[in-house]
Amino acid sequence: MAGHEPTKRAVNAVADAGRAWALGTELLASLVGGGLIGFAIDYFAGTFPWFMLILGGLGLVGGFIRVVRAAAQMNAEAARRMSERSDPDPGDSGPAGTGGQDEFPPR
Image (tube, rainbow, N blue to C red; front, side, top):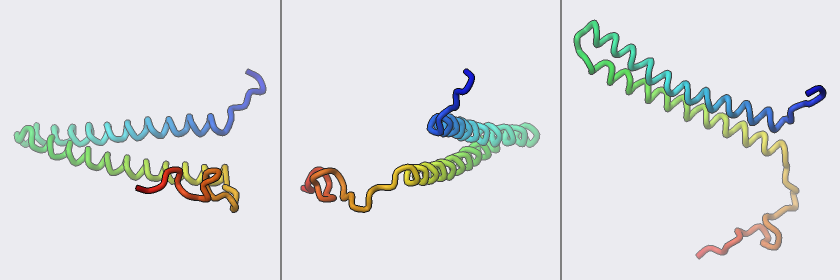
């Protein structure tokens, strides 16, 4: 459509979905890569399946570490965007009528 500009929110949603797919792919690639390298070592050394299991496990752990770090970075970016988008009123003290207290009193 001519003249149709995507909103910033839609662009951010598409970018976030792309990052999520990249994280999943990264995790799978690290697992498969470690497993394949281990399989090759096992094939030539005759130690099947030890190196495949060890390197596959190391690839999985490395993939999880990368995913957790990337997810933390994405959360920090989202929090920054949220704070830039809506700065609360300095006089706002929480939900209406609560004076800044939680909605339910503690037990």
